[in-house]
Image (tube, rainbow, N blue to C red; front, side):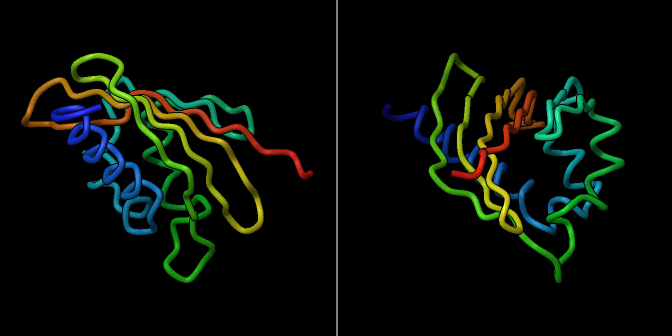
Length: 127
């Protein structure tokens, strides 16, 4: 990958890391900037989320408190699927629990920038 693809993936990785941080999870204003209006998620629990339910829940979910457990991401890679569409895959560790994650980000215009359109988390079973 070269040129615009590299910068698109780098921007999306930066935004994904913001959503994983306590600051990103506890700030509704920041989360509103990062989640697409049509956002959906299938969580590690199997629960389906839409944008409004996620915005309400993020501040009280694990990983939102400065003094609590934090997400530790690893193996984050991204692929540009089409202009304005990036797919990220990675793993997270949070308080001893590992999940495999997949996010699709889209950029509709330069004003709003990259926003998470879809996310899925799948628990990694103990070895």
